[in-house]
Length: 279
Ligand code: NAP
Image (cartoon, rainbow, N blue to C red):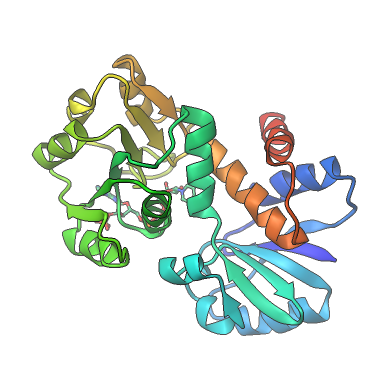
């Protein structure tokens, strides 16, 4: 048995640290390494992986969508999202899953004490991460998710994937953000704004003033550990959470797929978080 994370670039990935720590905690001597696979090289990789004892892998940029037509089976949630981040060999078939959305919901429950059921949420962004999180929130019973994106057509396209109609496409201008925030208990940033190495930043933060005082603000970004959005939210007395617990939880859920059995999730998350903190 051998596990990997594939992508390009991939050598900066934290997955080997997270999975290495969890496998050690379980007393399992299973190697997990990072493997560079360039765009267009997935068919060759799948053959190589099968021939070299790889029984599971995580996928990052640029492969999450490109893998879909190449796999034998796709979990329904991953099919709806249109992207996989976890692939396992099961009875000779490559099976794809997406643990990002469920990882985000688990992080919200653990880190902010918020259950999505019945919540109204303002979600910023309509890219790959936004799609996984918005659909997971809807699946977990959120009452309404305002999907606010700079490019409105992308928000409309994302919201069309929710058959229950709980996702509402919205604009990204300050007035719209404030109107959505005023109705929300939770604001989730799924854009790149504020990420280290990314030039963009929010032009202003007045939408945070519209949130109720007991609202939570969850930023998917974990580098830096506190984005300007989270700093501004904390200064306003709002509850804040960065993207690290989501990263950890999506890895715990991926490992359950790799090993094909339930794990002690809190113990796994603790081992993975401790390994990250030692870096
Ligand atoms: P993506 O597909 O490229 O989407 C980027 C989103 O950001 C789009 O909605 C884009 O809007 C918006 N955006 C970019 N620049 C903007 C600007 N200047 N003003 C307004 N909106 C802007 O990226 P992704 O894969 O979804 O990732 C998004 C973030 O989530 C990244 O920071 C990533 O690190 C983080 N993430 C974290 C985890 C975790 O485990 N914690 C997992 C996955 C992703 P347009 O549609 O208008 O271009």
